[in-house]
Length: 315
Image (cartoon, rainbow, N blue to C red; front, side, top):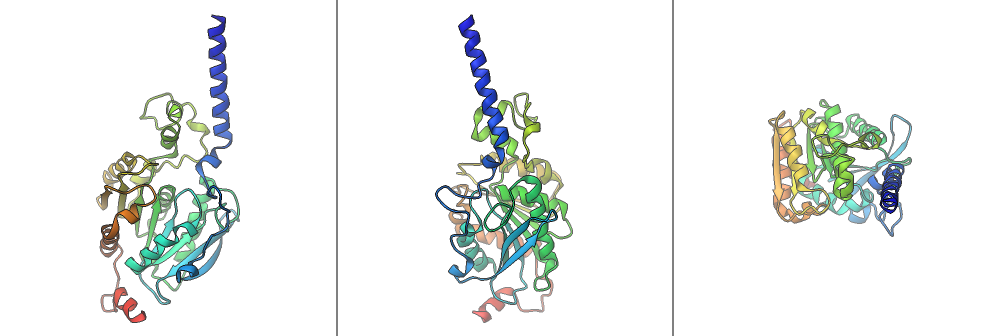
């Protein structure tokens, strides 16, 4: 019995030590500003892809200095403006090829924010801080005179979807619509996906286990509790081959939103993985967004030349 007791105490000690490490270093597990083998600096800028852009420097409400790129398809573009929130790993430069195609296909402006601790932005990432960063970006866009501020659409992928949902919920008068792609229900649920033994200690109350460690999670990003409060139109994109976030998370988010919001659209991409749904989706992916924009973020003055006509004349 002494040997068995010793094993039990040892296993318990290892489990407690492991959980203590997870709690202490959770931000390093949740946020990955630097990809392995690379530096925090941007590997390229929009100019490398011949994109017309502006370096934007902001201050969040708690004083953290933030960096962003504001990219236009042409100088006087008054089309929709997409406020893009990236995935967890790397920085905004790693999304430039996708944004280049987005601008080309949708004839839109794109504002790319570096969360605190990412890219050239100062500070250290946290849910509380990134929420402030997103608000600073939206406030900046809302005050610009060179865009149509009634046509701001928030687009979030993965972690960015959690950020975008919170922002849209808090700003129904400033955000016209929301697009979510491969977003998780919450970090609490993702803990059990990435480390299965944690699902007994961390997660939503509707799943199995006592969930005694939920209160220790500093960045829960509980999108499932936010999405039902978003009043704007929402487009959900789900890659069915997502190797990081189970596609069931997107289905749950859609069900929660659609129960309260009749302007929700859910689209699945059979070959879409976590990072490449935009690529594997091909023309169908971009046509769906274009139709969503035309329906929910339309041009106001039909007498004016369309954005497509303006692009053709500019090119």
